[in-house]
Length: 204
Image (cartoon, rainbow, N blue to C red):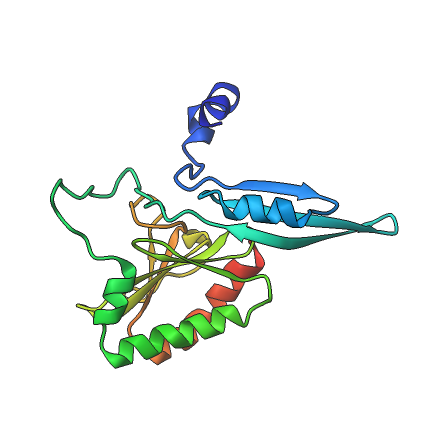
């Protein structure tokens, strides 16, 4: 698929697309229980979406089933772990975090889950992805600095950045997707970040 994009659209457009975690979307009028069972056996990012047409101008898309792979996503500009080096998973880091940081993550998680019934959570190796059809927030846990980093799909140039709270990560390698990084060091930061998270959610 990436070679097809490269051939038809050119290198400039192909490089703008995140190929690290591809998904297969199967859209149909309905799915049988055998279809759902078969998809669950495949360790890939596959989503079954049922469509229903109302009158002549309204189309409903309903997520029937979603499976995800636990493969690690490596961004080309990020340092790749050397052979023999063990990097802690995001689950390990969350367990090691102090109660305050854990509570902050639970508050963040509860807020994003409450945004809509279509919110899905994928706990990957090094980050936690919150998505609808696409990721709208990717979360990293940093117990040493006692902070949570949230990457959202907002153009950093569309707002005034605040050092220590929001940073432009468009050309900086990181786990997950999203060009704007939000740093949560306190519950106050979380409250300030909600508007940005909602904006990312609504655009994805």
